[in-house]
Image (cartoon, rainbow, N blue to C red; front, side, top):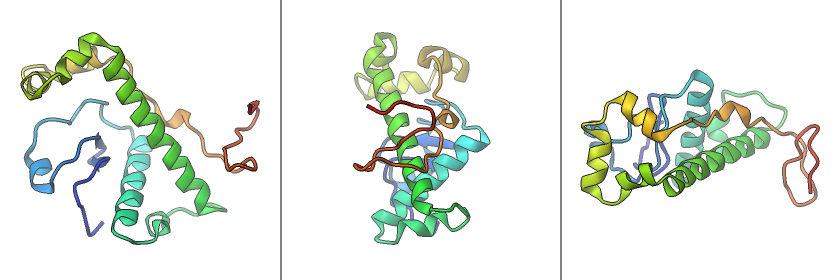
Length: 158
């Protein structure tokens, strides 16, 4: 990647940030390192490809440029798969923060948010956050209905 505007989502070393950060801030910030946990290799690939596609689109490049290293029958399938994964991730994160009062308290203001990152340890943050989303459970789809909605194998679409 040659351009990083600092926009969300941001993936760096397998860690996802849903906040807007300037590169200089992100390079020295201590917040945002663990909120969803460190990504396994499959999730890291999904996060990195998604970030690269977003960056390419933002910088007026063809999104397919980010998928040069994949060899699917249709690159659109991979792009739509990554989009569904990021939609699920954003929904998961926002739902978690908005529905868990013990977690939401940390997002009330900057002072309380700082308390989430320090003095809480990684173990304490993980305990407060709860279960993690496994991006690998969102599978690639190669068939779509007449409205462009994914048809999952064996699933009844309504």
